[in-house]
Length: 434
Image (cartoon, rainbow, N blue to C red; front, side, top):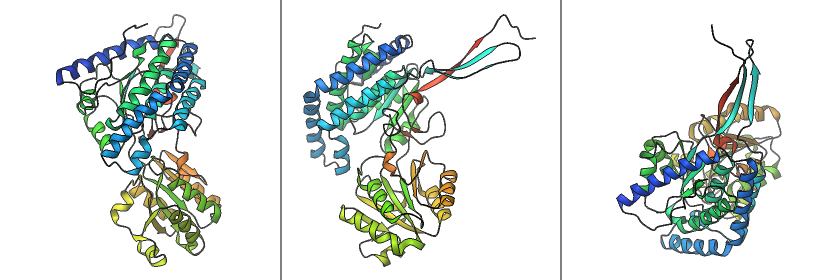
């Protein structure tokens, strides 16, 4: 095993120090990835369980570090949604530890035979899951991503270089220390999970543009500006998601109580997550029966409603929506609302303005449901359920690194299995090709 110790956290680095540090991170990650390719599932499980125990044991240290981050974020006047993403409490720390245990309990994807067949010439061919290698993960705000990403990369046999947001630097550093303790207790290379030891934005640029000999894939998790920068500057493949511009469509056949409860949860359970609904679409034929219960619940919960002219005439509480509202991921207690004629118009609106993340239809009639589920090409489509189920843990995947909205390699929640590739193993008995 690689016995090199992880780098100590630093608040800042000079340009020369940054280059040396990032190169060292890359070399250590590549060495650790080779070691991880040979470890057993039992070794990974032991390390993950030890990491979960370390998270619990160091809860007070993690909360103290988070308090420091929260103080800085408040001074910078970050939005309420951003503060909610950043905040840790005892319950959320416990959820991190439980999430690592859930990942540990998953079947190990590495070595899994995806398919196998025998050719007429006797060659036996297997498609077998293998790790991606070294993953660079760039994320903002949410310090729990440190735990989720570290656990998922380890489970899938990958080494990882983590670069969290500057606003969560101290929280992520404390969580990372617990993960390293787990690796040490499990007898695995402590450099299998590394964290960039500076909050400098220059580290992101170096990771994207100068690390291709060490890093096999980049996974960004954050806002539109971060994703755009990563996609523009990365010199290695990217598994990323665009903003979570999620929609809920209430069809005329929807149960009124169900529609009210699902829309309220989809918008207001946690407004700052990527699975939060940002636009409500509702059939014109059910405005008289369905609108008022839904709107009353949202307004009572503190949600601002922005709507088209038809809704503004119907309800004085609705503020006029602009064209930009249909394209906005608020991550706040604001919901844009639009009246549609039918499921076809709902699909056209989502296709025009959405980000291919998560969409939900509330309906009892099976015909529009099947049309909606079939014709929308978003990563996640739901029937009679809140968009806030767009989450790897809720999918039984233990945790996730993010929701991928692309169409290559991975879509939807990116869990341990999605952090693998495959190779072909071919067994013969002396065959030669004529």
